[in-house]
Length: 413
Image (cartoon, rainbow, N blue to C red; front, side, top):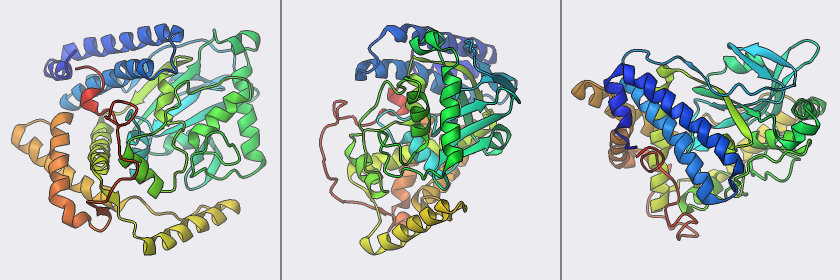
């Protein structure tokens, strides 16, 4: 299908529901078939990615163009059975051991979601524990500013999240065939560990060392305790510019567990997805801002962290670690100045486009606006973004020299 599929659906509102049903059904069919595919292969991962990510992109483009609320906020997908304790949250029955993917609204959330060979929609992943006696639901997660924590589900949902996706291990998995409550035990294991002692955040992203945990490690560790290996696809980030940028931020492990990649693991069934059409514009602005910045990284631009500035940054990080160790909420920088400044310029350009054309800019037009805004704002972005640096490790990526899949070459074209 072509990328103008979404534009046709947006122009004719009754067609949008049909298009949404087609995309959803296609996703479920491919997900079921992929259980028999060698999903550890890059080409298989890309095929699943095109259907899931590309289908979502097409439908959400139509939603943005529609002035009316044409689709419900909640999309029910596969209600696969589970023997684990459960409770109803936001109209959906959630079982202990279920996995929650989400997207936050911070600049770091956009970087986590987009900073991959396969840019995704989600920046955070967590696991749900439901108490068998009380029905109380707790979300176990790891946060940059606090490390691993156990959060009541109600408090978790109060945080501003641009989207949510609920995943569940399929009941025909061999582990569940012998122990139907294995996922409940997995959730209990990580919950008990988090409550027993403080586990700091893993800034190095070393997924095979569980002394420290980033968000994906929480879920991976929990399921590994019952013999389930999630993230069938564990990519090595190879795009030279992306590697340089992440390295500037302290990442040392580039074969890692990307949060959004877990939705392409066919061992898991997508149960339900929440998205608020009113927040999709913010999501798009965050995405396109990071997309063009990462394009700049591939051209050789570097984050402007001169060595005298590294010491204060290191001290802030160290102080945050000390505060975390004693249970306090640490003070960390609010985000990347370059991202905030550029995003504001793109938002103004998008508003001018809407005023002149009478409709929001499609993502491909928004990308062009963002590229122009970056070119116009270069003087303003200095010294945080430096041009003309040599990128170490320059060369072709494992994907034929195209280190990252953009929205226009991923999915329905």
